[in-house]
Amino acid sequence: MPDFVAIYDTTLRDGTQREGISLSVADKLKITRLLDDLGVAYIEGGWPGSNPKDAAYFEQVRDLSLKHARIAAFGSTCRKDSQPADDPNIQALVDARTPVVTVVGKTSMLHVTEVLQTTPQENLRIIRESLAYLKRLGKEVIYDAEHFFDGAKLDFEYAFDTLKAAIEGGADVIVLCDTNGGTLPWEIEHFVAQVRAVFPEMTLGIHTHNDGELAVANSLAAVRAGVVHVQGTINGYGERCGNANLCSIIPDLQLKMGIDCLPDAAALAHLTRVARTVAEIANLAPDNHLAYVGKSAFAHKGGIHVAAIRRNVDSYQHIDPALVGNEMRVLVSDLSGRGNLLSKAEELGMDVSSSEAAQVLDDIKRLENEGFVFEGAEASIAVRMFRAKPDYEPIFRLIDFTVIVEDRQRRGQLSEAMVKLDIGGQIVHTAAEGNGPVNALDLALRKALFPHYPEIAEFQLVDYKVRILDSENATAATTRVLIDTQRGSQRWSTVGAGTDIIRASWLALIDSVEYGLCLSQKPEPAYS
Image 1 (cartoon, rainbow, N blue to C red):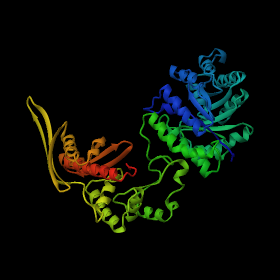
Image 2: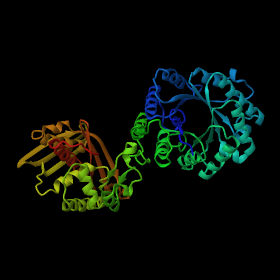
Image 3: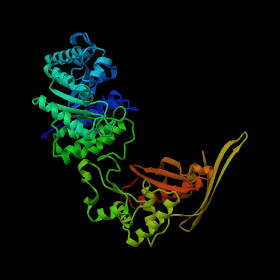
Image 4: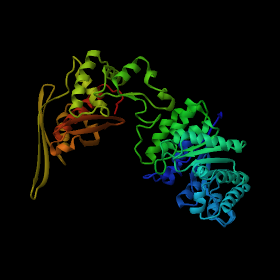
């Protein structure tokens, strides 16, 4: 196996073919900086012959001072029965003025005869002459052998003839593409080994798609067989089921296979930040369940697992999450043991005894049976740990609340809430109107508490989610409410549940307020 593998990122071109992604020029430049800081060897900026936006990117990217990456422009061979010097696509590659050009050509006889509708010999000519033309202009030329593995299965000799034509044209790297994503790892390894045997001096690369959920495995199999150039995208973005995910390939190479692929191994600790930032730039929610970089990649829920990692953190983790810039998390649910609560208390900076943890755990298991879920509402866990303390004094006690919703002719809709609280022995009775019953209840609660706790004015509800748990029960269904609250840079989440959506919302609201007020008295970091 090689000592070093060059990473070729195609997020800005192949990644944008994912449904739902559209990047502006400014977005692409931001991602370029991130990838360069990470240390990838190549950044494929787009197809300059396909749209004005990619042409604008290549013009503006020349102003960036990149430390590691070489920018590549992507395009196809010249058209059949034409010369490269007269081909608009080839000239767009030249006009991009990048040091690297990547040219895709047809390898499969199916595509030669039915897609290009040309002869096998003409296809070989346009591969050879397109690459030779670009080489004469001083470019580093990467050749993407499209559908190579499918083509080799269909017509082995012709697939290899296309590679020979690319080498005769001066290709610096031959990239074997599993374009349809249906090849298996042992097939990848077999064909790469055969290409190496036929062209032992040629630098080989791999480009895989994830239609068989094997893009990462296929890329690693190709490296085992001797490729030294791996193409992929951040978070595996790409058309259909996506491309090979570089956020898995890079740590697999570095940490599992002992093969360097970044110029600075310490840059691996930025991988999680890069993955999540690219997701935000692409206006996509980060996938919490991605290997290495997902929020759940090192999250532990089962009680037996948590008990084990409290004794030895390596017992249920394949790497130290800090190596890729991630962190371990302990979840609390009805599957939890006492260790989950103790670990969560340590994470929140709280001192909780074993008996207190057992009391809270029993409460959580009962509530989860009623429809609560505490995995995404860790502030509700913290509040219950506050309440389990022997010296706990509640910030307020609810005496009662009333919510009125009216919809009258000529007056329209009216929502009004009244709350009666015991705040430090003082009975406070207030009312407020809102644009709905939950909003009115929230405003009435704040109005009652503000004279005693003015900091509540800084609490902002930033998200409110409602989920119906048993829709077959129609209007009698159980409702779960999740509320996110923010104060400055601190953000926390709480939960309520029940057959009454207003009461479920109230339970989440009072947890949110109590946690926030406890936080203001003892300012640890907030957890969401």
